Image 1: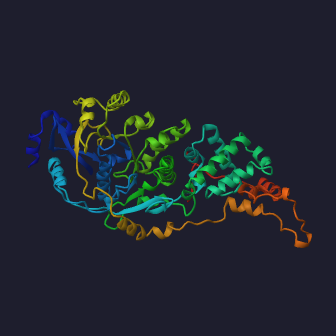
Image 2: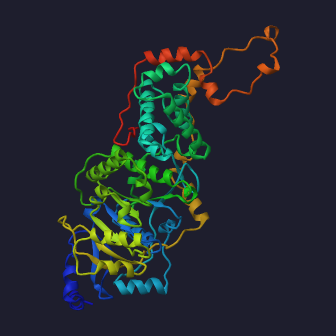
Image 3: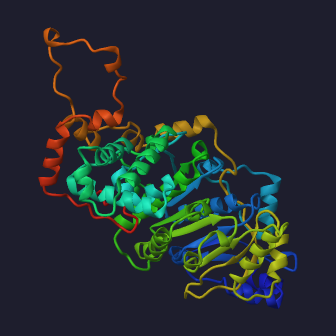
Amino acid sequence: MTENESNASVPPAAQEIAAGYAFTGPALDLGALLWDGTCLPGAQVRVPLAVLNRHGLVAGATGTGKTKTLQLIAEQLSAQGVPVFLADVKGDVSGISAPGERSERVLGRAAEVGQEWEAGGRPCEFYALGGLGPGIPLRATVTSFGPVLLAKVLQLNQTQEQSLGLVFHYADQKGLELVDLKDLRAVVAFLTSEEGRGELKTIGGLSAATAGVVLRSLTAFEQQGAGTFFGEPEFDTAEFLRTVGDGLGVVSLLELPAVQDKPQLFSTFLMWLLADLYHDLPEVGDVDRPKLVFFFDEAHLLFKGASKAFLEAITQTVRLIRSKGVGVFFVTQTPKDVPADVLGQLGNRVQHALRAFTPDDQKALRATVRTFPDSGYDLEELLTTLGTGEAVVTVLSESGAPTPVAATRLRAPESLMGPVSGEALDAAVRGSALYGRYAQAVDRESAYEKLTARAEPAPAPGPAAETPKAPEERRADPTLVEQVVGSGAFKSLARSLGSQLGREISRSLFGTARRR
């Protein structure tokens, strides 16, 4: 079919919408326009590559096709030489590394939307938080993770968050490196001990009671098995920016099924990755293609219960990271999951179907409709009748203006729509050049070891001088806190810490520390 024949098959009202997506530069193909219930392959809906650092939103109810939309966008970005980071929450996106399977259903969808479907996988790296589950372990040191994000994971209130910030400030000044959770626990234990109370008084606004709450929260958090996510070797987020020899962008997949029971942890860890990228990358301004597109799945978990300061930091990070060539797509069920200040910065929208079974659903539906530009569609009805793999789209044009709202039947991904086998995934992980760099955890000397070494008790007297204790004088083995603070050597420690020159660490919006 020629271009003129295609245009002739598109009704005039639909032609006006289609004209809004006729870009001249490189673009990703999303699908074909839906108009009056008919799919129009002659009216292609696309998004310019150059505007993908203006961020975006992929939303929709469970089962409407959001995951396949992410896969479709990610594989096209990779083909255009743009690296991608994608969180695989349910464990079903690993198929992007393998060619798709030709079937009547796939070929039927391709014919409907005017797609020349050809099976193909993309180069992938597989990661796992702290090595839980298949993947190269992603770890962060407590120092670089920072107090703001850690307070979010620990679900501390605002006062406790500020107190934790003071503890980090103290450790930064005194050269006490916080590599893992036991380092932070040792510092807090010292500050709440008899020997450390003098130091505590030098930290304005930190009470012993609040420090005790923080210590208990840390202990409980570590007992839940979360300690494995913090430590060394710390992951260098520059690894996400790679392409392979043939120019394809590497798709970095964070496999999360093993930590689904820790949603606060993985959503906050994603924010650390994004904040670390922002902290390290140079300014590049507007570019013809992004340096990285970062998909932030289950975004509502990040914003739920967040403090005002935390939301302000997210808003500022999203606003400023665009100039560093990074595009961020938030993935969630409804736009109301994303605060208005963040939503206002998301220039590209792919909205899948919404459910309207309850009054709250109806309210969310109406709120979603109000976030779209005016259009010729009855969006309130359309958004409840879209099928799986269909969405309402509006993006930024090459000039930066919003495109017309377009109901779209989306293309089929060309990679495998499902997980690869466990054997194939394990082979890919162990065959990666990064595996040897990050697989083995390292526990070097840091705050815990420094404090413990200074707190070691003097050698016990010999047998001749030893006096047996009465039964009532015997006691259980000392606890960790008692081992750290139970010696008079802490008086010497406090004096030395108080007299040494501080080493203040430069911290970013989220209190994260620059490592390189």
